[in-house]
Length: 250
Ligand code: BTN
Picture (cartoon, rainbow, N blue to C red):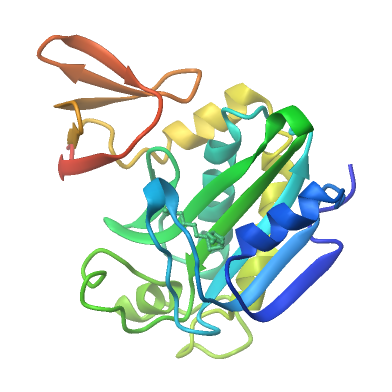
């Protein structure tokens, strides 16, 4: 397989890197093609949400992947593990967890999100990742729920692994580089290794969760990546959708 990140198209401003990457995939862009942007005007998240970030403050990237070895179902989980590892290596002392299926959290606040789209039947997938790196102020609706590597570095006076100086936190380009390095092995990893790494970072385990159809106690993930929840009526396995953590586990 060719390495991730080549060829690369960088936009100072675009609608959505996922849209650009999908357009490239449709006309035959090779595995590993990377689209990045300083700013998105129509960044998209899961469940129809929007994804916004001040210009130049975040990693905004989409990768074209062909014939995924880790398998379609576990790719979102593998990507989340890679984001955790990259973030932790750029910001020593920061510990990342994953909120099912693939939000990356630091101490209960969202650091990064992942949106996977594609046409498996045509042999391609686009892996979109947004990671807040240098953001120091979030809009009112996100404040309290979102964080960045800059904020996490400064919160505890941590020194970032970057040549930009301790005050700034790591640069988005440094985080992107680490992220591509981390994705490379995780996207070809054995399913059991992906599941095991993901389970060690499970932010919901033992917590009280709520979703559109019910509530219960999060009991980890199944081997197919579904979220297991113990409810009054027995164990449920959620394969898609959104869950909310109402009370963390012990
Ligand atoms: C989520 O948490 O809901 C997923 C967010 C994914 C955002 C990234 S930013 C780069 C790429 N382009 C997009 O339009 N979305 C993804």
